[in-house]
Image (tube, rainbow, N blue to C red; front, side, top):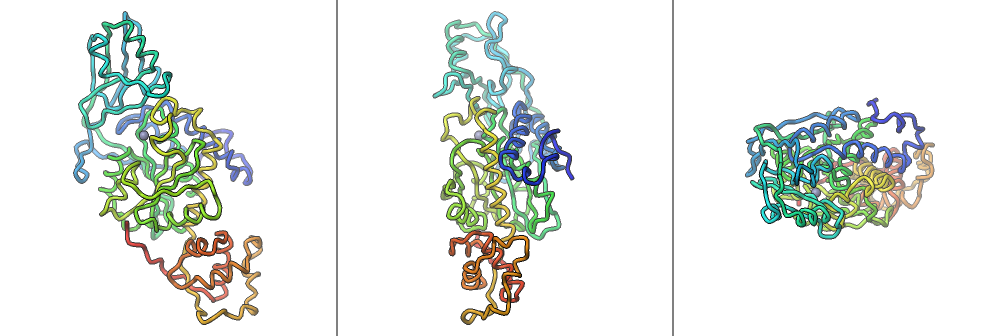
Length: 452
Ligand code: ZN
């Protein structure tokens, strides 16, 4: 049993509350709140501190890739560190990094200068929609620096006109890029990737909701048997994904999913892999069709999060992506308004539940062949009802039995059968289990769809 991060959380709860989405959402939100203040970036101490806190849930393996290491056509950047930053006037800090780590462009080069407003202004960014919001900007892979501030701060600087003392105490050095991995069953034949980017400072929905939900799911899957190995990876967006793909054999994967933007009140958006036919794609097709009208499915496009890297033509592991809001399409996106009030426990809990359901479906999915083949078998002697066991008699469905017999052609898997029959997954699975036990069905290896 892995030690728990919070004194009053699920450790002391009864099994029924352990499955209560609101309780789960509250625990995930509490975890997210602890991670929120840390200054994450592409590299650096904030990322390591994040992984240290998450190691209270499961023992993450921390990987360090040295600066300068090639990854395809990219190079691992130098490590970036910041200790302080401000814009001051007459000794007063008018914009202060100590109040929000969003005030400085992530990856800014160092600055120490006296400037007029006219000189400073090209380095200032305000939010387009919310005067009170601090935007989030980066200077990755650029020799650049800048400040993000509220409209009121910008007006004040303009009025004062300067001279201002402008300071960014940052440095770059030969260090490493850090990512964290955890695997649930290293002896399993196949793996499934669960990926979340971890490189944004104090933003809750964008990056942290995915990180916290992934970590919570890692903890849960580590505590129960599964058929596949669930391989969780937390890494900086883009360069972290490129580096990971460069370092890993993607052959033993049955699929994967990218997680982020899971704490807001929008409907679910599942973005398909390029083929739209992998098991996780079809699990969400089934869920949208049968169980959850709040899911919208999107075709793949080469924009968005790290599914871009996995979707590249020669990448063997294609991933779907689960979000609620869409990146860039909610006004709080990349601003100080994407905070702990914006993400709510009830939505985090709902997202966790949906993800867990999809993973359970993929884990139990199999192809079956009807061994009787010619017309319907005479079912009377088999007593299929008893075959279901006493634990889940509610899943017994004679209709599902007929559908499974009809669809088990040695090519279709259980997800296809649930989609085609529009029966509940539990019924289809229970029918297949009973028919298999009765010797009327035989599992076959799943024929993988060609990638992309
Ligand atoms: Zn982002």
